[in-house]
Amino acid sequence: MQAPAFKDKKRRISAKNQVPAQGRPPSDSTQVPRWLYRAILSLYILLALAFVLCIILSAFIMMKNAEMSKQLLGFKTELWNVSNSMQACEERQNEVWESVQSSIIMVRSKVEKLETQLAGIGKVDIKVQKILELLQTKPQSSPQ
Image 1 (tube, rainbow, N blue to C red):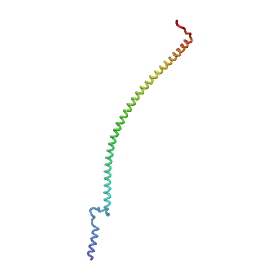
Image 2 (tube, rainbow, N blue to C red; image 1 turned 180 degrees about the horizontal axis):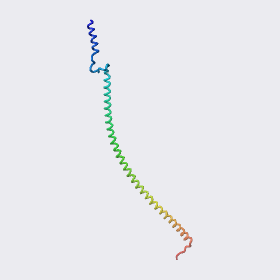
Image 3 (cartoon, one colour; image 1 turned 45 degrees about the horizontal axis):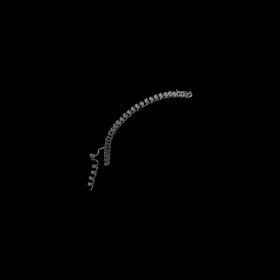
Image 4 (cartoon, helix red, strand yellow; image 1 turned 120 degrees about the horizontal axis):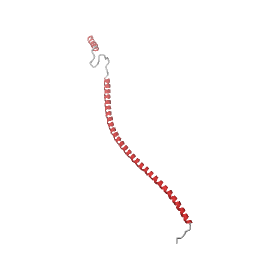
């Protein structure tokens, strides 16, 4: 009975002194758990997904940027048209204002002429009144 026990003991000792398997480095005395490999793989997958998401978002941003650039060009054109219209309106307004000012000056000069003529008419009216009074005070002679 001692022989099988002795052989069993030798096997245990030889198993302890055997070279480790190829998957494990000789200096590492502890075995890495399988879940750690899975966790690292999951992190790599998450990193790849994040990278893909960044690429998709960048493409989306570039599309929106192109749309906004087109809209801005449209707004620029509209603003240019409005600016030109405003400038044309301002020029017309200036022309009308100058016309109105010249008309006002012309009307003022005519009013001043009328005032001077009215003053002259007033003087004539006073003279006519005096003549009428003189004629009424003189005896009327009959022409015969």
